[in-house]
Image 1 (tube, rainbow, N blue to C red):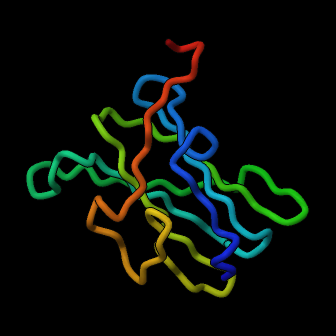
Image 2: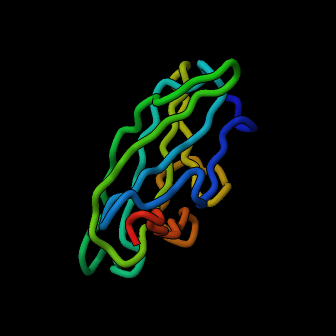
Length: 126
C-alpha cells in the first residue's frame, strides 16, 4: 500500500454537502493499489453509549487518471456534525484505517481522530 498517495482533506474538494443531510466524500489513492474503501461515519456530539449513530458505506471507484484512483461515496444522514474515517484495503489484502491525516491499525473510536466535514452547501442551494 502506497501510504504517500492516500489523500483526503475535509474541504470542498473532498467533502461537501450536496443537499440537506447529504454529503459527498472523496478519497485519492495510487492507481491500482487499493481494492476497496469503506467509509465509516457518525454524529460527533451524540456518544455511542447514548445513541449509536455509527454507519458505514462502501465507496465506489469513481475516476482514474494516469497515476491516481478517486473513490467516492454519497451518504445521507441527519446530524449536527459529521465525523468520518476510511477503512482501506489494498490489492494484497492489507488493511489500514485513515482518519484526520493519520493511519491506524484498527477501527477509530475517538471522534477527535476522525475527519470533520465542514457541511458547506453549494451556492445554488442557499
